[in-house]
Amino acid sequence: MRAYGSDNPINPNLVGQLNFWELDLPKLITENIPMITGVIATLVSALIIYKLSARAIRAAIIRAKGTEGDVNMLLGLWRFLITLIVIVFLLGTFFPQFGVLGWAFGTFGGLFLGWALQPPVTGFAAWLLVTLKRPFRVGDRVQLPSFGLVGDVTEVGPMYTVLNQVGGSIGSEEAVGRLILVPNAMLFSNLVINYTPRETVEVEAPQSQKARESAYILDEVVVRITFDSDWDEAERILLNTAREVTADIIKATGQEPYIRSDMSDWYGVYMRLRFMTMATDRPRITHEISKRIFKEIKVNDKVDLAIPYIYSFKRGAQWAPPFSQEHLATLAELPRAPNWGQNPSSEGKIRCFHCAAENSVDAVYCNKCGKRLAQRFPAGKGR
Image 1 (cartoon, rainbow, N blue to C red):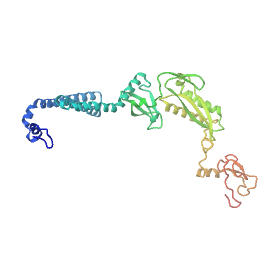
Image 2: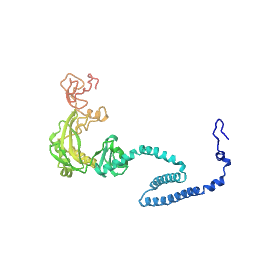
Image 3: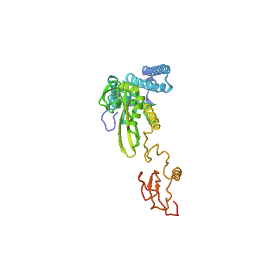
Image 4: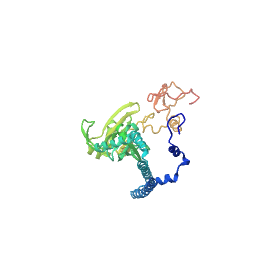
């Protein structure tokens, strides 16, 4: 028997084997009973092992106060591993003809796994580096500027570093209880700032002194005072307040609070109180200092707070925005010259509609605030 167009004879036994309907199934099954039995035994054994190990895993997780979610996640991983092991075992033991597939899988699968596992391997290397070098530890407050993230380190694992986020849901540097998983691989390629280094380092103090710093950072509270405030009195209030609130920090660091000032606009003088504060307790300390400064200035006649568009907090408190009912009512009670509005050329005085300063009736602009004076009407027509 020859194939069409070929001189090679065709084995008639091979033709019979290729015909499904001519296969001797009972004989085929009888000859392969050992292999079939082995496959079934392997599957049953794997199922029994999985059931027993799953119960053990569940009991261990529950004993460790885990949740059902933790159980399901670990069992899913364990189920996948057992399935993969069983498939590889069956192919290698009972189906040696698929050895070429195993070789291909080992070759290309290794390349694929090497590419896919690059971040985990990098993360593991970063974990080893952090564990040995310890640039930060559990309890430190760190910042990742590239991601705008600040958090307290709660755990450093082989794959992830866990942070308790600081800020994010509030406008302050306080821990909010929201956990963030940072892949360790990111630590190789991103800047990390440690707010609370455990090692003490020497830093240059503003007074050209050497201060010992440990978990402390420089902070400031800005207060704007009016130009007619007593400068020395304002400095005394700010410095004494900072010394009272941060007495323990001053003792630990040896750095006293100090003041820097500037006049960047025409609404007052900026007094910048700078002091050492605890990196993880910054909001509370700033609140205490601000509250005490406010109370001191409120009862002090020599210092006043400047407010934009209103000259000062104290002197401008009785003035509401222009053209409000309170403003108009206040102007109505101001004394006026007898001939105001009747004889513009007289030597009487008029008051500015905006700041109530006295001006000559011939003036067009106020000599105090510089704004245009109220419109004057001819005699007999009133205001």
